[in-house]
Image 1 (cartoon, rainbow, N blue to C red):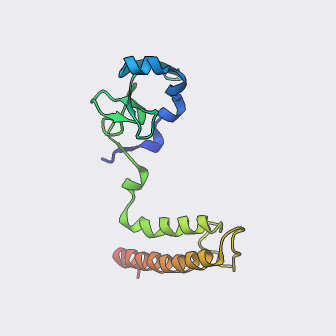
Image 2: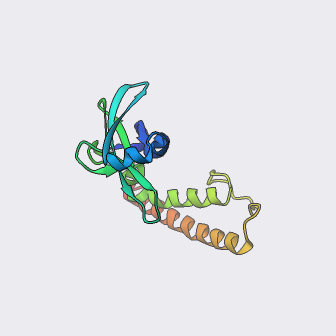
Image 3: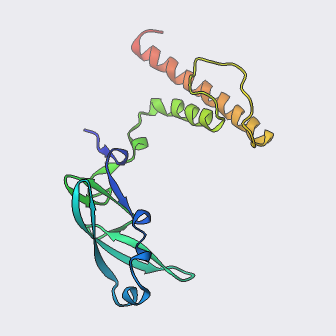
Length: 164
């Protein structure tokens, strides 16, 4: 059974909360750990926060997970917020099959070149505005290489199915 992916769950991020605006410097100096209360469509939750000093001044805020780890995001699953490891979540890219990776690389390159994702169409495409010609040429060469890789994987797949 595969794990759930973080893309499918609600989360709260330190960047969303911006706790620096909620706490004064005196409060932070006296309290290393504190609790804040948040409310959303799923209910009210008390979340633990801590902070650590940065090298050039200021502080960095962290959530405290129930496992004791510091993290920047907590995910809502089974009615509780916890870190990715506690909720047994991973990223969608970790669940891909090895045979899907060449196609995904092709799609990323086509997206970067601002070309349509329809792989059946092969008209001549233009260089995106504000992209250097050297970058454009390198991306096109990389795309051609990844297309060959994708087609080879597809042939292996067809041979495995007994179609080729």
